[in-house]
Length: 364
Image 1: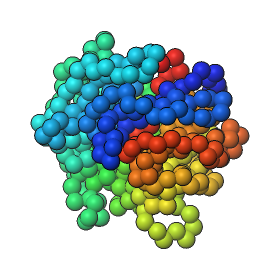
Image 2: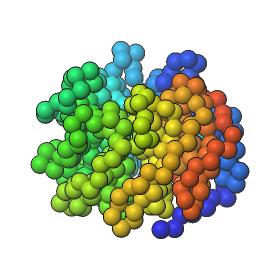
Image 3: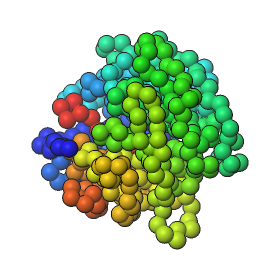
C-alpha cells in the first residue's frame, strides 16, 4: 500500500481538558521534512474539547464539549484554510451525562458519540454543510458486567470506530467487556443496535479504543484494564467479527500499573502502535498483512507523563504523542522499513493535551 509524502506543512489540532491553563482547542504546524513543530496557538475557546473528529471533506471538525451544567455536547466547527482558526456552525447537547469519544461516518452523513459515565451511544444526522441535524436519542448499553468491581461496576462506552466500508459502528464498552455493533446501512436518522453481532472480549480486559487496518479487514481492540490487544477479523456486510488473536502489550515480567490508552495503525498496513500510560511508552508491533496478526517489536518512552493520545501523520513519517500530565506534545520519526520509533527531541508545550488530530493535507 502506497502512502503520500507531503511537502507542505501540516496543521495539527489538539483537544484538551480546560484546566491547568488550557482554554480549548490548540493548533500547531508540523514541518514534514524535519518534524519541527510551531508553538501551539489557541484556535477555539471551548470547554473540555477532549476529543476531535474530522469530516471527510476536511473542512469541518467535530469537538466534544460540556455546557455550564456539565451536560455533554458536540460542536460543529468550520476551519479557516489559511489559519486553522475554528468558527462554530452549531452544537447539540444531551440531557444526561457527557461524552468521551466521537466519530464521523465515511460518507459524512452522521456523527456518533459515546458516553463513558452515562453508558450510552447517540448520534446526529449531518447536513450537507456539516451542521449537526436531528438526533440525540440515547441508546443505553446493557449486559453482563465484567469482573473488575472497581472499574466495571456499570456499562462504560469508551469509543466508537466506524468500519471503512461505512456499514457498522463498533463501540468499545469497558464495563461490559464487549464491542457493540450498530448498523449504519439504514436511513441516516437511524442507528440500530445489532447485539447478535457484538464481539466478546476477555473478561476483565476492559475494551477502550480500537482501530481498523487500512485494508478494512481487521479490527484491533486495545484493552485498558489488562494491557492487551484483541485482534478481530471483519466480515464486511454480514458484520461478523471473528477472533484471531489476543495478546499483551506489556514487556515480559512487567509488574507496574496497567493503563492502556490509544491504538493506531500505520498507513502502510505493516505496523501498529499502542500507548501505555502505566510506564509512559508507545509499544510497537509488526503486522502480518495476510492474517492481521501482531508481533510485539519494542517500546519507546513518550518523553512525558500519561500519554493519553497520539496520531501518525498521513504520510506515516511522524508520530505525535500528547502527554496529558506533563503538558507536552512530543515528536517521533517512524522508520518506514521496520516501524520503529526514534525520539527527535522536539516537543512543544500544550496544557492538558488529550487528543491529536491531523487535518487532510490540503485542508489548511
